[in-house]
Image 1 (tube, rainbow, N blue to C red):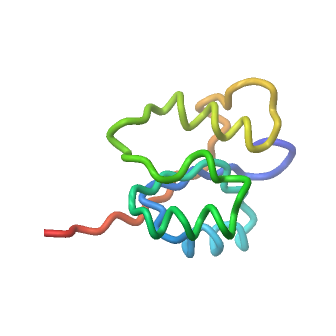
Image 2: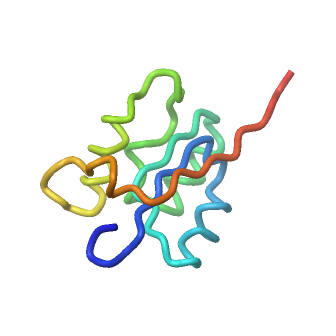
Length: 96
Protein backbone atom coordinates (compact mmCIF):
# COMPACT_ATOMS: atom_id res chain seq x y z
CA UNK A 1 0.00 0.00 0.00
CA UNK A 2 1.28 3.45 -0.93
CA UNK A 3 -0.34 6.64 0.37
CA UNK A 4 -3.21 4.58 1.81
CA UNK A 5 -4.04 3.10 -1.60
CA UNK A 6 -3.77 -0.57 -2.41
CA UNK A 7 -1.43 -1.29 -5.33
CA UNK A 8 -2.15 -3.79 -8.11
CA UNK A 9 -0.15 -5.22 -11.02
CA UNK A 10 -2.01 -6.72 -13.97
CA UNK A 11 -0.72 -9.62 -16.08
CA UNK A 12 -2.37 -10.92 -19.27
CA UNK A 13 -4.32 -7.67 -19.14
CA UNK A 14 -6.31 -7.88 -22.36
CA UNK A 15 -7.97 -4.55 -23.09
CA UNK A 16 -8.08 -3.69 -19.38
CA UNK A 17 -11.66 -4.44 -18.36
CA UNK A 18 -10.69 -6.38 -15.24
CA UNK A 19 -8.41 -3.52 -14.22
CA UNK A 20 -11.29 -1.05 -14.35
CA UNK A 21 -13.21 -3.20 -11.87
CA UNK A 22 -10.12 -3.55 -9.68
CA UNK A 23 -9.76 0.24 -9.63
CA UNK A 24 -13.46 0.67 -8.81
CA UNK A 25 -12.78 -1.58 -5.81
CA UNK A 26 -10.16 0.91 -4.61
CA UNK A 27 -6.90 -0.42 -6.02
CA UNK A 28 -4.44 1.53 -8.12
CA UNK A 29 -3.23 -0.46 -11.14
CA UNK A 30 0.37 0.63 -11.68
CA UNK A 31 1.80 -1.84 -14.18
CA UNK A 32 0.27 -4.01 -16.90
CA UNK A 33 1.53 -6.66 -19.29
CA UNK A 34 -0.25 -7.51 -22.52
CA UNK A 35 1.19 -9.10 -25.65
CA UNK A 36 -1.76 -8.82 -28.07
CA UNK A 37 -1.18 -5.78 -30.30
CA UNK A 38 -4.86 -4.79 -30.54
CA UNK A 39 -5.38 -5.01 -26.78
CA UNK A 40 -2.13 -3.10 -26.22
CA UNK A 41 -3.38 -0.31 -28.52
CA UNK A 42 -6.61 -0.13 -26.51
CA UNK A 43 -4.68 0.20 -23.25
CA UNK A 44 -2.36 2.83 -24.74
CA UNK A 45 -5.34 4.85 -25.97
CA UNK A 46 -7.48 4.62 -22.84
CA UNK A 47 -4.76 4.56 -20.19
CA UNK A 48 -1.74 6.47 -21.50
CA UNK A 49 -0.09 6.53 -18.05
CA UNK A 50 0.37 2.74 -18.43
CA UNK A 51 1.57 2.92 -22.05
CA UNK A 52 5.21 1.97 -21.48
CA UNK A 53 4.27 -1.44 -20.10
CA UNK A 54 2.12 -2.82 -22.90
CA UNK A 55 2.83 -4.67 -26.11
CA UNK A 56 5.31 -7.16 -24.70
CA UNK A 57 5.65 -10.81 -23.85
CA UNK A 58 5.39 -11.77 -20.19
CA UNK A 59 8.24 -14.25 -20.67
CA UNK A 60 10.60 -11.35 -21.32
CA UNK A 61 10.01 -9.29 -18.17
CA UNK A 62 11.01 -9.68 -14.55
CA UNK A 63 9.34 -8.89 -11.27
CA UNK A 64 11.89 -6.10 -10.87
CA UNK A 65 10.70 -4.58 -14.18
CA UNK A 66 7.15 -4.51 -12.86
CA UNK A 67 8.17 -2.99 -9.54
CA UNK A 68 10.19 -0.27 -11.27
CA UNK A 69 7.41 0.53 -13.75
CA UNK A 70 4.80 0.69 -11.00
CA UNK A 71 6.93 3.14 -9.06
CA UNK A 72 7.37 5.26 -12.20
CA UNK A 73 3.60 5.49 -12.70
CA UNK A 74 3.05 6.81 -9.18
CA UNK A 75 6.22 8.96 -9.14
CA UNK A 76 7.61 7.13 -6.12
CA UNK A 77 11.28 7.87 -6.82
CA UNK A 78 12.36 4.30 -6.04
CA UNK A 79 11.21 0.84 -7.11
CA UNK A 80 8.19 -0.58 -5.36
CA UNK A 81 9.09 -3.12 -2.72
CA UNK A 82 7.58 -6.58 -2.90
CA UNK A 83 5.43 -6.02 0.21
CA UNK A 84 3.97 -2.84 -1.27
CA UNK A 85 2.10 -4.69 -4.03
CA UNK A 86 -1.23 -5.79 -2.62
CA UNK A 87 -2.72 -7.63 -5.59
CA UNK A 88 -1.53 -9.29 -8.79
CA UNK A 89 -4.30 -10.08 -11.27
CA UNK A 90 -4.27 -11.98 -14.51
CA UNK A 91 -6.65 -13.09 -17.22
CA UNK A 92 -4.74 -15.57 -19.38
CA UNK A 93 -6.51 -17.42 -22.15
CA UNK A 94 -5.46 -20.60 -23.88
CA UNK A 95 -5.24 -20.23 -27.64
CA UNK A 96 -4.58 -23.63 -29.18
